[in-house]
Image 1 (cartoon, helix red, strand yellow):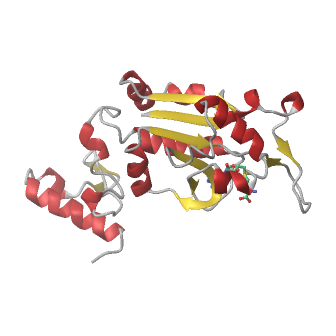
Image 2: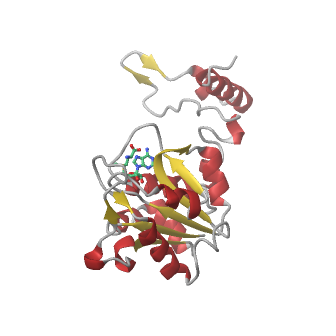
Amino acid sequence: MKIDVFTLFPGWFGWFAEQRHVRNALELGHELEAVDLRATTPLRAGQVDDTPYGGGAGMVLRVDVVEEALRARWGADPVERRGSRRVVALAAGGRPFDDLLASELAGEEELTLLCGRYEGFDERVHEHLATDVVSIGPYVVAGGELAAMVVCDAVLRKLPGALGHSESAVEESFSAALEGAPEYPHYTRPAQWRGHDVPAVLSSGDHARVREWRLEQSRRRAGRP
Ligand SMILES: C[S@@+](CC[C@H](N)C(=O)[O-])C[C@H]1O[C@@H](n2cnc3c(N)ncnc32)[C@H](O)[C@@H]1O
């Protein structure tokens, strides 16, 4: 998989790329590149934003700046190429990011992420350059970089070989293996701690009962009977 992250702060992704599971994925041949939106701006003095039509506080990232960055990267008109690959614009008001979308994106060969800043992107970026507008949650962070890392992290750990144990990503919170429910509780040593004991079933050695207990806990956490 080849992931391009368009950002005004490409330096943020150096640390991210060094993290174990990301490094594993890169060593397996997957690619992650942070592309500087400012490097290809068609405006003078590295300008990338402008004041909003209609007035109001803050600056808006220009559509022509994003267009040029994509054109330079792809060597083609990004509007004409729209739909040939997933281009995800990060925005607080977008489609909520969830495990299903992470799995869907993990199936793509190429993925482009657009990180906003300031007041966000000119709406025409969402409408004519992106294929998806995605939110990591109903709150606002200062820029799309952390949101892009959340998306990359959730997507990359789904790629075979990125995690130490391949089963780790299969049976997790919200996965199909758990019928979309949160994962069951985990315990480790000590078995007794300040009067809070590990549930006896987990040391019973009865794998079927352990499985049943875990699924029941998972369903309970989802508020299911
Ligand atoms: C300060 S925010 C802009 C907030 C915007 N004015 C609003 O009220 O929704 C700057 C950038 O951070 C990113 N961002 C902030 N919160 C986000 C979230 N919950 N999910 C995804 N991206 C987010 C987006 O790329 C956004 O363009």
